[in-house]
View (cartoon, rainbow, N blue to C red):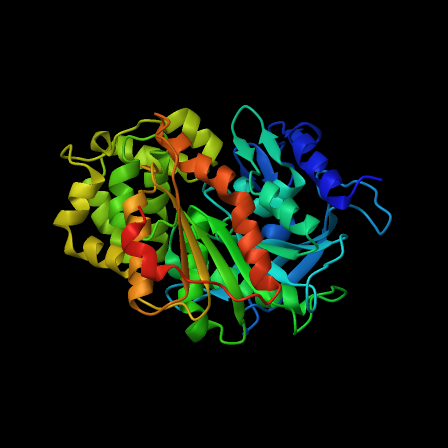
Length: 441
């Protein structure tokens, strides 16, 4: 008889075909409906005017139909999913509604202790509400003449579920929830959204997660930055969420270095998401942006604000920010000339605090999109503070395209990353390799 793992592997392979949704341009019969690039966002994603006081408190929940659900002896595989909206706090100290999903696995947990929980922080999805990871579980490939969204995080989620690990995935502030723009790579917003997702999952009725369940964090790229920031902020923001381990892959820890690297790259559209997110986080930055962006730059930022990563790859690959500015300087040069922008990005730097729990930090040595050097520097900074760090350089040859150099380590290292995290969830101690850091690339 096929094992749950094999069935789930087959499910992931087939999801792109069976879960594809061709979305027609929406007929706006409901004047209150939010429509993003032809996709009507379900009313569930519209936050109420008033939110609960407690961080992580559930605002609402409902069953979430997974794109592919296979019959199993103990229930549908990979499990039963619940759509979530919960309360968090943003970097300005204001309440914010965040959406996401919880999946109760059908597979049994065969490790020690109660069934564990992993919070998955998605990689770059885009800035349009239709790009949210929770919607990607329902529609792994969402495509029409206006948008292209791929739920690529589903693979890691299904692999965790196959191990009997419960999963909660966050959409982050403003991605899915229709009341604001997604504050892309804002370390505080994303860290809080990840930690509050754990609290929300714990409060759901009818799950096998208990107070004794060990908790882990998983994320790559944008998600790697989110989990790295969450591991740092957990002791102060969420002391009730004890972490067994955190996987942080290719974290954008130094946004100054990352901004320079993505300018003119395959993922140049992320520059627009960053600027949009910075202005959403701190409205005082808007006059600076307005002063330096020309008409083409402002149009690009507006266009990108509703795009998914697939859209941006098609429309803005290799775009240079010099064509977006009034004086032809790059965004990196403008940052260096504006003290307010320099201070804002300095505050976004990850690595100034010590995680209180083990972290596995992986980075591709050929990654020139989220540069390897700045990710390695994060591991060095944590080691210097005495943190329990397992640093993994993923040594691969350069593949020519920046996006390939960034994505390939995710795929080649994912199995080892999940095994490391599973060991932590089993209660096995991590072995820091900080002492060997000078010898590692």
